[in-house]
Figure (tube, helix red, strand yellow):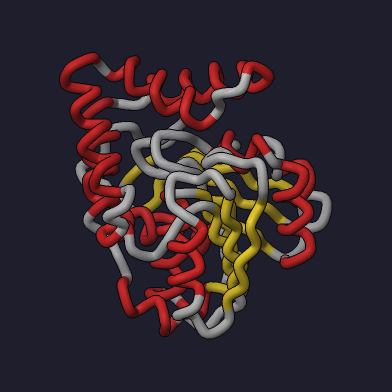
Length: 257
């Protein structure tokens, strides 16, 4: 792990392995630990960079700005600091939004994209995004942040056999600063590329859990707008595919990257 000042904030990241660069970007309210079951596998073949976004993990916890645009710039500046000119980007949930934004704003930096249970238009995900934001805000105001952590972790990992993951994810969420979490979430729900996604030409793998928050049809719809995208559905998986179907996810990553 390394902590360095990037784009005016302290940013923590893991840098493991050698070879072509793969950047792993985690989800909202979580940390680079989302990738605990991917880094050991991918780093055998690639140089893996896995940062904690601003306001997350070991990075600066309460920066003045949050959101997809500024997080994209953080990662771009981090890669420049590391003298990395090109990389493949793998983004889970909110990390997928940053991947899309990176490909659109800095196409020269991107080799391939892997989008995991995410999309290019959170602002238009009316079947999930707006409702989820309202629901989570209400839970925090009425029941507190720990109740929100309980709701999210149980939704992602409801099975008895998933208790360890549920507890670990619960802890990651309550470790967040509440205001920073809500500010990041709110800005995420305002972000979207909309039809600009059709301008992204990079080879793109879209991985969709069959029981994710957003439907497979939603992912089919936006993937059909892209010039070079392939959709793969992972069965018996909820939003937390990085854990609940890690082996299948890793197989798809290695095949594509």
